[in-house]
Image 1 (tube, rainbow, N blue to C red):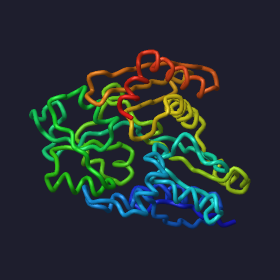
Image 2 (cartoon, rainbow, N blue to C red):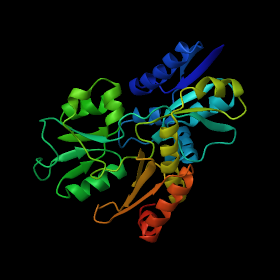
Image 3 (spheres, rainbow, N blue to C red):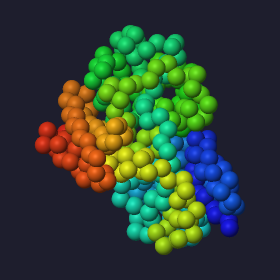
Length: 314
């Protein structure tokens, strides 16, 4: 039986799609990987400050920041042109289009963020005013809480592009997800790892999401063997935090869950842009209802003032 997997064309996206392909081929399936160019990919190719073409501006407005890297892939999945899509789960909005579902979440890789500097200096040792590159508000706010005297600059592009920009001097350091750096075999570039308390990860960071059509039992059966129950439950809790708070990847919301001693432990975080107000909440549950745990932690964040912070940003 042949299945077609849709993927973005970046090195990291293809690594992820090919990993899924290899697992399914080993299980006896014939797999084709099809590259689909998304609006997000096209945006990254536009020089900063250059106006968007009218047609692209309309697409961005319709998709919103949450769906720029998946919109076209999901359209082909719904149309039946592909049978499954492989995403970095942190890019997948919590509200999926009608007719699509998360068929499997493989075991998560390292969920932490990493610090990469040109001169192998740690964030603690960088001089005041040094430029640290990251386009993520989640990272920027937590970094400002750690080092408010540094300058945080936006940097677009895929992982390879950002590393090249760092070498060209567009910053003294940058922050990336450990999982992507590991997957591309660039672990030696890492200066230090942030602890989960220093830098709470993005929802779903380090995990893959395999999206399928809800009414496609063939694809559901094929990917079911790749699902890692503990990871799937953890990311369900994290995504419930994001769903309750109503945020996406462009707001400073973080959440991370993991199983310890028979309990699913979840931490959530919301911070203001200056990093001067960082709200944290934690919870744990032994029950098999990750969404309830995520909602509980999100409600704790809201009681502490998360809504006022998020409203001020959006």
